[in-house]
Length: 64
Image 1 (spheres, helix red, strand yellow):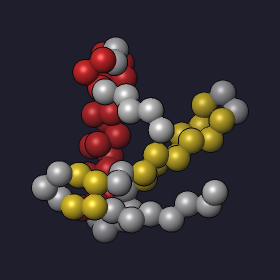
Image 2 (tube, one colour):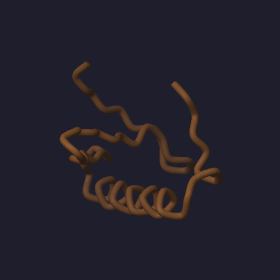
Image 3 (tube, helix red, strand yellow):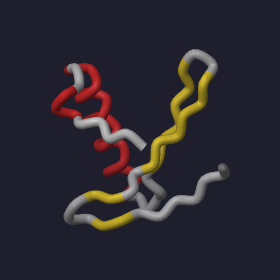
Image 4 (cartoon, one colour):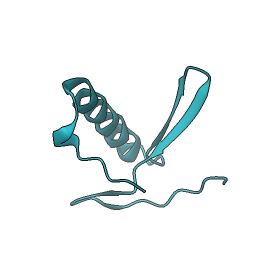
């Protein structure tokens, strides 16, 4: 897997990540698994939060 550093990304990428983290925070507060599904140009993507410093690690199951 290739690591992508947010500092190298464009502003729109940083805004997307900030929005995702906000959504994950709301999911964690309500006791749900922190993940989102995105549909874009016929593709379905699932993004899972694995760990958040100071909060902990999260375990999700996905089909491979």
